[in-house]
Image (cartoon, rainbow, N blue to C red; front, side, top):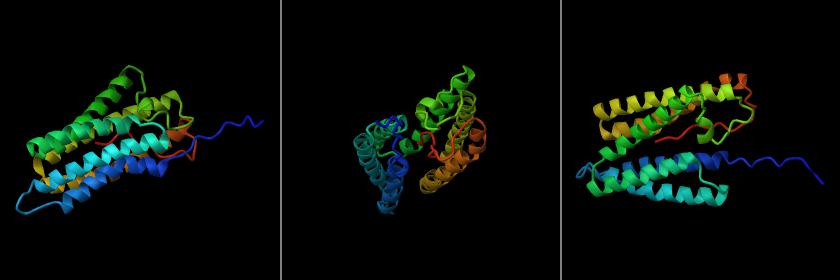
Length: 207
């Protein structure tokens, strides 16, 4: 009998598609569905596409991975809620406010947990970083808490000063790139606290 533990299957690319696919489809649908006659049409088309895509992502996650991550649950709940408001009122502001609420929520949650000595990010990422010690999780939680607080502030500044199209472009591409760069910047610190090389890069929830 072989008593060697079976390695957990990796779902890096699938997780990436489930987490960011709906957002990218929203961007594409908003661009393709835009109309000079009705500036809000692109946002409405994109919102409907996102709502369908996020529901499909939840179903696929449960089917292929066997579970739905906390990140995907929150994104789906807020996406459908604010999407429904957007379609009902035909007001694109609900789309722009959602990221601020998500960023602020996670920023307060992670920083609050750090103050109490609790690394809440461990539960959000489901201990994805194998070997990381408690001190490393605390540092990572604080770093991401501050990062989310900065994103919430930046999103409000962009929402107040930029057109919807420019805001959308920066939200999809700019924030995604910055988030991955920030995740990579944390790796040296994580290695000092026990992170094992070869783990999948993971990032907290996006709005």
